[in-house]
Length: 327
Length: 308
Image (tube, rainbow over all chains, first blue to last red; front, side, top):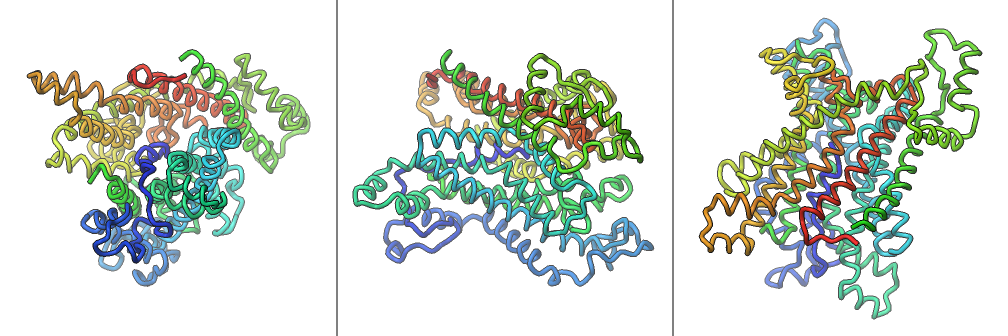
């Protein structure tokens, strides 16, 4: 789970591909009215047309929606209480009553897997939001201002980038959430989010910075400046809408890798902790019983892998759709 | 090139100081008693606390502690644990195992990843191509600890082909499965990188020229295509080696390999601040130097790239 890898999957678009301001997300079909129908389409319009024909896109989108619904309304899928355990049914295997069997404390694994979606996805989505906001903002500022300002921000990013990811997260979480600290559910989740954001914002900062650098000198920016637009207007109306695509692709993949990262941290015992239910916590609890009850590992792992895979595939599909060379 | 290297080395200094200071601050200014639980169930005796406070300069401000530590470090002394064991010895005992594991993982990545990438890059959209694309996606999505547990269970417990945990010091054959687990994600990236790069270069002018000259296909692919296509792959492998040598907390933990990752995890859990900082210092150094080497290798492999 090393994040620098991910950045290599994202390409910076060439500067001469202006898209309509306002139409930001690639999955957003909303093209401005004047570009519909037979008019020539922009980059995002082309991408959407390309995307619609891809089965991979629809499959991953289906799973993502499924997991989001699962996170929002777990009671739609199960009526069992995920934290109710009876020791008499400890490690009873899968059956018609409990599809995925019972865990060591006799809790319904199916109910726990369903309820675990919320914490896992919440951590991933919040961390991605934080990473994209902080990294993107710093990247825009560094790329747009340039000079010594850029140099300092880039070095600061290098400092955080130099920290090994898992190791850094363990140290941070161990410092602020030592075992036995008895923090609330919300507090633990925010701490995990914070440590993930802190260690991964440099990558999105670099992506944003390089695409700002590539776009900054484009004709339409020069034209906007010649027309007397203020820096603020240039950045928000012209620069950001045209630089967002690579960051958005990266962030889609990032959601997937954060789901995996949360699980890794919980597995190591420093991330989320019981009584919070997440896939990582479940895998962590199962590790001592793998040799006798492998299903305790397999069910949460299967959900975890499916979720990560869906986000990675969606990112891939969007990236291919946005890259004119791949068409 | 000389000036470029000097400039890069100078740039490394603030990054190195920043990163290590960050870790030092996190580890040593932890809110809480550094002696909690150090002496069993009893509170530590006063003279022990006094000796240790003096030894680790705990009564001085943080930056003084940090610079004292760095001064010793530059003289090759990493200090000692609370128990009095020399950290130099500890690292010397653990690091060779980590490096062995890193090289096994790298070999797995390079061999399997490159083969898959080259084969699919040459013949796109076939059955093999789709198989590799799907399986690499799957590997990327699979967290290391799941791969580790499943392979350990299958090979070690179910089929009894390997010992579930390795001995100390580990032999190379014992490290094959852990190396595969550690390298699996990067292996997928290598395969995809090689595939894209080869597919892109296949339609390049120089390949067409080589075919038009009447060279046998073997020579076109082996000499002209591969040499140009593998540059990004080789640099990726270099960066990855830097990351792999940073130890694998998860893989080493699962297979019981006595490496740097396990040491540092143990040190974090038992609050051995000096050990944590020392290991992180080494890891950051290795990582930064590897990145510099990769950038230089890049210029060496691709004469079009010039640094000034």
